[in-house]
Length: 343
Image (cartoon, rainbow, N blue to C red; front, side, top):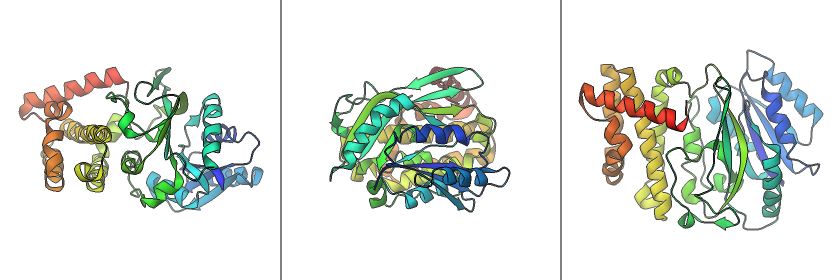
């Protein structure tokens, strides 16, 4: 068994995938205990498939090229998880990379855990927004939330700030835990990373946090899914993901830890807020109908959660009726955008 499997979803990413793969190879340290699964998700516009095969030819015991029909990011992650032989599983997008110094601290821990019968379920590191067009870097740290010197449980964590949600960038899961819960992400849909960092959490019994900047998230590329105009055009996919999250976890029944329940409720509140804000940005009768529908869906599926999430300060302000309410909600969104440096 390998210590860790890195899944690298690639779609027409020949221009920048080399930097990502080189950063993952640095984690090996000559031990041969990592594997890199390059998942070519039906690339057609460049030589991504050829590059993946070339990487496999250079490192046949470490790098594997998996070619599949296009199914989207979620499908590529599913395929990576299916093929993974590592005790741990980490998704690294092809335009991002891992920090070598940070991984030099994390890999010894993963190697020790791989020798144990009961290994830690979730390993967490910080990530950094590399905002290319602004020439800035914004680190996201969890130092005041998790202990920095030992394993912990959800009952020992602190409170997350609005800018500190766990993202796909910050998590390394134990592979068998993901398989045990039969995690499968939707295909042909953006924003599946929200499911990846939400649905598995109730199954996590042990956590180890490293206060190092592990993941470098390259943000600002033209056409990136977090671009504001792109998000408006893909609002139906955002709604689809939010419905999956609503259906997947009943916070009152499935989550025993009060602190984890509070965090997950806050995360779902944020997802509902995003739906409301972008639908109000679109500002059509159809969009307004979709905004009402998603709230009705939450109320029907999770009536106990509905009231708490609707009263959340994010959603109270972004769902005030009338034209004035719309202006107030969007103003709050743009203020948060400046404070937390997203999009």
